[in-house]
Length: 164
Image 1 (cartoon, rainbow, N blue to C red):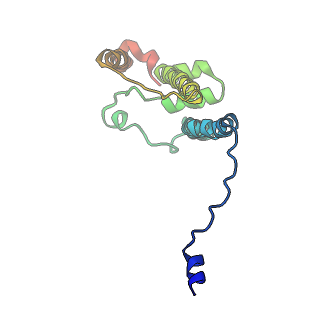
Image 2 (cartoon, rainbow, N blue to C red):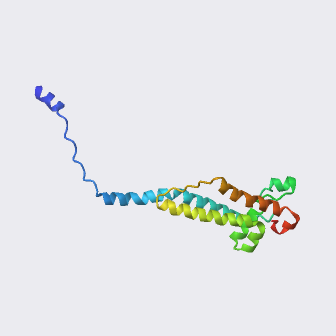
Image 3 (cartoon, one colour):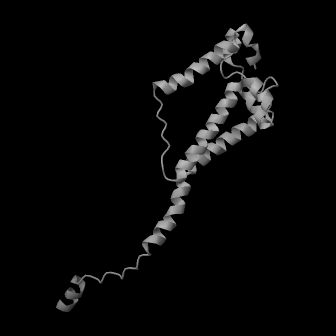
């Protein structure tokens, strides 16, 4: 009986450890999924924006009834800075830059700025660096003042060329 108890008390031998792959192979194997994970958010944003532009390119905003009317324009008759933005996007999708600029020049500039920002985001994500946008008061005023001037000028009699 004693021999059986001794067998039960003896700890089993640990299984032999597999040799770990070299550090270089591990880093390389983990590198590709990490890059894909870092670029997943920019890719999702690109897919959403491409889908939105595809929809606006397909469904013409120049035909009434497809999109809601701007509430500011409807109730006050004042063009907001975004009025004409869908028509501008529609014209850009169809390759008509002149019509896009006439519909809303500020929207075209915004589309370009967002494309540049997205490109910087992807480049930083591929390198493993976060995109940090730290806007201070000077930056906000630099963005806000032209937006305000555009809105005021497009609603004055001599700013009719900025109407959508």
